[in-house]
Image 1 (cartoon, rainbow, N blue to C red):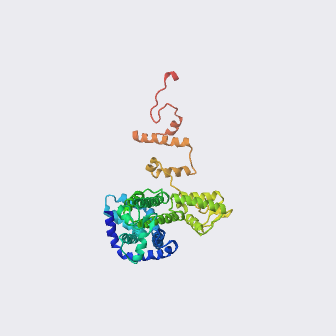
Image 2 (cartoon, one colour):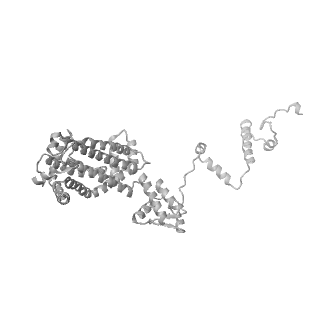
Image 3 (cartoon, rainbow, N blue to C red):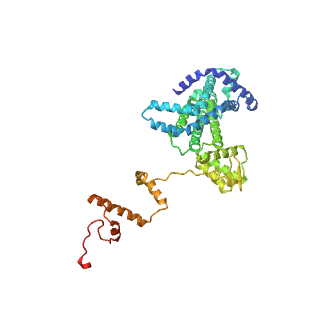
Length: 436
């Protein structure tokens, strides 16, 4: 079933069989002069060289893929906010997503461009190898080249043999079924393992771990799905196609490893490891050694207080060593190092002041707190004893107004002479005879 689908798709890209076969023949001419025209090394290395040539041509698309993936990671918090805000309106959610992509210049499909562009050549190669297995000339491969390709064996497996071939089909190619299945099984496992490691490397080292989004869950799922797809589809691929796909997986893995080490995602483990190494070299030499290091330091200084944890740790490490990162990407020591604080900003730069949190009673009272503070700051500040006497003076006055409507004379003097245990502002209780 899978082989029928692959054959049908390969027929769509049959127009590429001539250029693909021409490239293979040119490389075969070179390697055939070294290893012999009928050897598996000559034909196998021709396929590997085809992959390398295609991937070199795809480097601009790969750079675009890296930028698109980086932008998608940076947009994850905003995308998550849109999903939560319009979770009950899928149409509005899609519109807001497209608006966000347009505003930021991000294309979600850019991350798939290298695979999409490479796929036609993959199916064209499959079409060429299928024709070789059937004994048919194709493209620029004439009868002499066809006979040479059918004789070529890679570790005992013919170039056009598949894992699912019968013993009779394999015997017709001059090989044993055991050799074919062992070689194809090892190559399929290596192909799936390289795909898994490439995706795992991306997820564990080059993802901002401070942001948990559905995009990360999707990438984690693909880390297991893609290897399984290669595992089940690989049994239907000829040995030459397995060589092609294994080579492109190894190329992708090494290319991604280079990018992660040189330009990691901010906030990722890869950035932490890179900055630790950079800090060690800068402290050892008391200077940035090349343009790349200066650009990294310059970018960190330009972020100011928006740096992540690893970038702040890098600046603090330089400060402890008596160095300070400068705005142009260089480092300074001695008096020049004192011009910047531990965050890489000029000393004396005002700190961000956070407003003091008010209590519930202060928020409810509103302006009364401010009025009280103004009274406390006035030059005619009263003592605490006098403040306690003020409400006592006010209470008898208000009560006198309610009872008689007139202010009693000398009330303040009587209250000041009142002893403890007596009522204030009213008739006094007679003393006990025992106290007379």
